[in-house]
Length: 270
Image (cartoon, rainbow, N blue to C red; front, side):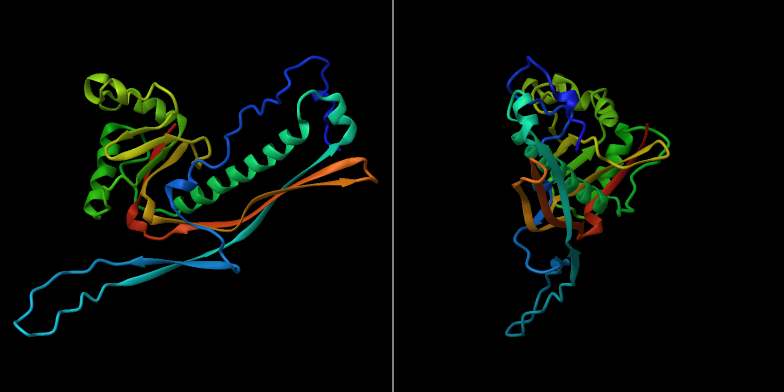
């Protein structure tokens, strides 16, 4: 049984505070996502670039011969379960059962982000050195790389960075100064996410860190794929022999890079 004794209090607020947890997935809506996948894997299509040419009068229209590629994403099953003693519910103010269900669902939401981050980690398009932080020069280098690869500037670009890098962004006038972005676009207000350089920038606590270097990623939505065979599902069952409920949370998902040219990684020293 979990050590729930510490949760026993006589007077406390009715709501159970789930502290220091990200509320589910932050990144799923920033990538191509396919739901209700049947089977153990699914395939995402990658279309190459075609070239328009002229033709002679009455001649056949030339074929672009667009290159085609595929990415097969395999699904894996993930679970998060917890026992909840019936008497604990009596002793603990607030809806403890809902708190346990939500906690498991949020854990699976973080796993979704982990899958997407692991996919982004496969990128080898590095902008700038890994010996400094998130500088303006490094950002502009990544911006140039995306442009040189013809990554569309269509509002579907996203950049996910660590909290240290978010702090460094706030020291760049072009990002945080009202003289450049206007009062309505300041990153100090509300949710910690901001549009800049045609990209939605957001901090994330789950990015990979190796030897003091944080791997941040700037990517287009179409460049990364996420597949779900089973959305997050919760089930609560009573076990009389234990006088407890068992809360079971589960999902089946996977992720991968569809087009490596659409992902640029910024390695930032912390």
